Length: 130
Picture 1 (cartoon, helix red, strand yellow):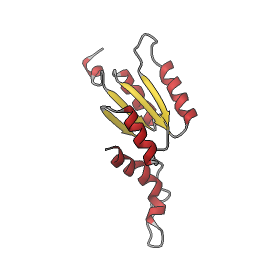
Picture 2 (cartoon, rainbow, N blue to C red):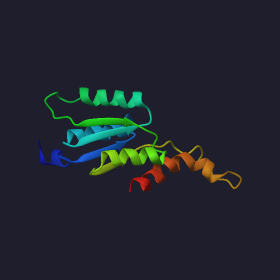
Picture 3 (cartoon, rainbow, N blue to C red):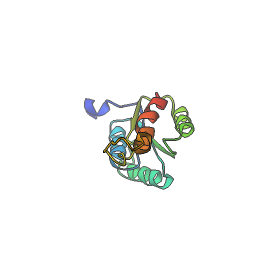
Picture 4 (cartoon, rainbow, N blue to C red):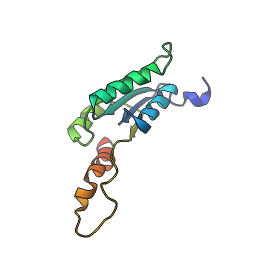
């Protein structure tokens, strides 16, 4: 293993929304760099499928340390429970969240309604994790 591949050796990485796309790619890269990884997403079947895919993509001789859990990142109790269970950890990656319903801010539209889910997943979840 080259020095650059060992940057995460013996580190623990949590990837929230790690079941697909960028999150799953981050989980795979962390595993390839020697980290133990815990992926989480809101849907158990997606998390299970991602775990299976990650396991299948690595050599069986590799010491693969990966776990998974499903929970709603916008639920403070669920998020706190996950972080407490997984503690201590070295890195936290959150790729969860949908784009805002509209990027057009007008006076007669409630900004909380327009940006609520995005703020819950991208802003409040990070503050709660800290």
